[in-house]
Image 1 (cartoon, one colour):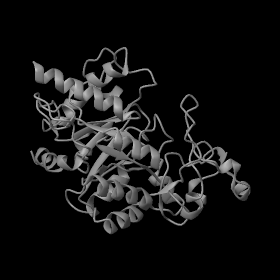
Image 2: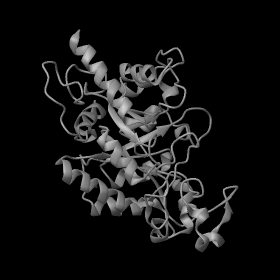
Image 3: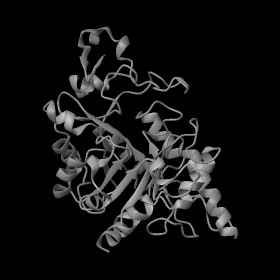
Length: 346
């Protein structure tokens, strides 16, 4: 019951304000919390989470990707976080830089390439925040457009929050963010602990408080367990299933996860069988009062359920997930609105 009450208290921070849709006679289906009720933890609409921004259309974790995601109606913006050599959090998904930036074209950094983690490359943790900011980001998927390559700089976390502040000022709204801490144990082994760096940013931004519009997520259970006593913000345990402890919460049960986390982030295959039936995972999480944010829905990849991404989204929304990570926020917003319209018409 405590977890259910906590989830009800924190769920309003998961909503980002977008421009209101035109008024119609039916309930406004494009507004996330429009009637009718959904099968989520509190009956509010599932949140559309922009996975590394609108990364299906722009280079991931780039300013233009976040701006586009906001314009498309995403409720939550997600940055991935690595650590720089000078201890700043950097908005990057991979620890290596050759695939997502123009570093290979920078002769001044040619001698900084080295072998780490079994790969020869340039590494985020070998560069200062200012050096990383000088790089330009690129599309990492070969089958996606590279038209926006080499335009945006790599973002330190403070720059990302400056962007969020600017968007909030322009719309007069509050934007929820969902940062993912990448490889915290590996960073600690290199003398770069992301926990104090994260707390510093949250404190300076006035976000280290109950009800703050921020959700901290990680695949690393010990990191979230360390974080729990020093912050009241929403914590989410990511979960890929299987036997790999790097992706299965170190083997912890949902009951154990609920001792330190407010939410779980399971892969969509953990929630739904290929025939669309529930695995029972969501129901078990729901019984513990845990929010469920699932990943990752992509328009340009085969769906786990159904014949199309629309089928997959409908199945996840109908199941009752509280949020969906997606590379194409506009599609997830449109399917949600269509389902609300259909329900309102019944």
